[in-house]
Length: 142
Length: 142
DNA sequence: CTGACTGCAAACGTTTTGCACGGTA
DNA sequence: TACCGTGCAAAACGTTTGCAGTCAG
Image (cartoon, rainbow over all chains, first blue to last red; front, side, top):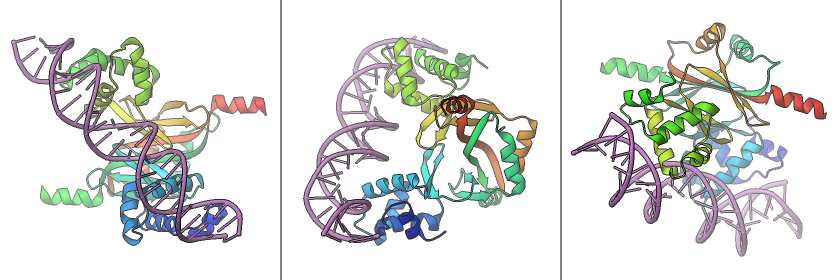
């Protein structure tokens, strides 16, 4: 599941240094915007072009290796595609946490949308609020 | 709830023709992108500027009269702010349907994110798939 | 009447494109 | 080696800004 080279080849894409760097970086931080990806990869690969990042993000999404996470009030972030999960977005520190659905959660989600009226392929479940760390910070300063 | 003039004044904003036209249009179609709004309003108000639309969308969001609905693979849409609900996005025809959460649904959603670990302010629940109309179309043609 | 708002045009930032070169399979 | 992918620079696109004139309160 972590062998990006294999995933790329399987999708008919060459495993270039740039693509592997993009995937490795996103994998290490969880979620990342285009700019963030570019600024971090350029450290190890100073010659990489922003255009290359754009082209690859698009191709990797089409190849089902990445997923776009659109957000209110900011640019989209991207993550390695994996099992369906929720996102907890902190409005104070901007951090984003994955939260995998347990059995009960999955059942709950499925029950929300009756199959006969809508054939759901995938869903996006984002919760915006204040993360534990920031809650504690505000308690201290108050 | 439908008196946009009053809502605007209450938020300290003037009820200009342009703003009322924007709100009226979004209200009539449910969800709309910036371009869509501009192209439709210009019919009745040929002098409206795209810059005005941009400025107002932003101000109306800050005034809590509109909400942004960010989507994967396309530009954000905007809707009149109302009770929390889900979105069913059809990947075939591009239509977007609101679905209000019933009591059980709300309970289900609340149970997904434990209050002690994250203080949720609002959530986005989008389901992508195929709407009933498009399902029937594909059945006929098959 | 006066400050808030509009429309215009220019500036700005972001994303896409075309092409010659380089690297993967 | 053949072709896909990269990097560059320019183009295209989307969004924001400043300002003089206009309108709602």
